[in-house]
Image 1 (cartoon, rainbow, N blue to C red):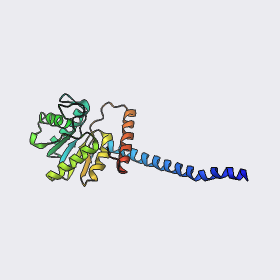
Image 2: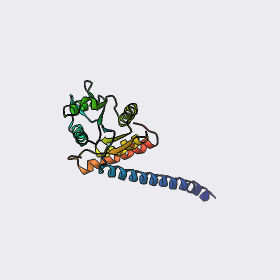
Image 3: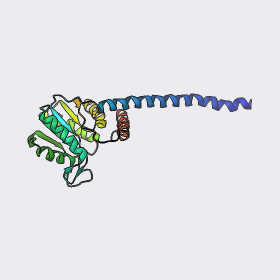
Image 4: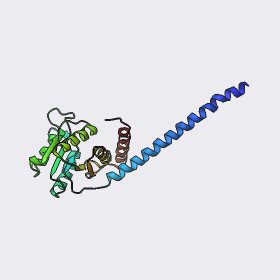
Length: 206
C-alpha cells in the first residue's frame, strides 16, 4: 500500500511536466517564427510612394549624428531625393544629452543636405520605440498622413511596422545599409527584436 502511495505524486506530476514541455515547445516555435519574420523584413526593401519618410533616431554626439544615425539619415535623403515622399519625420529624445535631441539633430542634418525645413517634422521627446511609434502616429493623424516609409536598422523594422499598422498606418520598410555589423551581432539583434515584438503582442509595452 505504501509503495502505491509513493508512486501517486509521481504519476500526478507527469501531466504538469508534459504541459510545461508543450508550453515551452509552443513558445520556442512562436519565437522561431517571429525571429524568421524579423530576419526576412530586415533584408527586404519595400520603399515606394508614401506620404512621409520616418527616420527612427539613434545616438547623437553633441549635435552630430552617430555613424548609425547618419546612415539612417543618408538613406532617408536618398529616398526623399528619389521623390518617394514629400515629407520626412525625425524621431528621438534627449537620451544622455540634455542639450540636443535625436529628432532635432536629424532635422538639422537633413536641412543641411537640401531638404527644406518646412518639409521636416520632428518628434523630440520619445525615449523608446513604443514612445516613438505613438508620437509618430499622432503626428501623422494630426496632419492627415496615412502611409510612411520606415527607415531604421533592418532588425528594428518588423516590430516598428507592426506597431504602426496596429494604428491603421500603411508602413513600408526600408532598412539602412547594415555596414560592418558582425553576423553574430545581427543575430542577437534579431532575437531581441523578436522577443520585444512577442512581449508587445501580449501587452507589455516598452
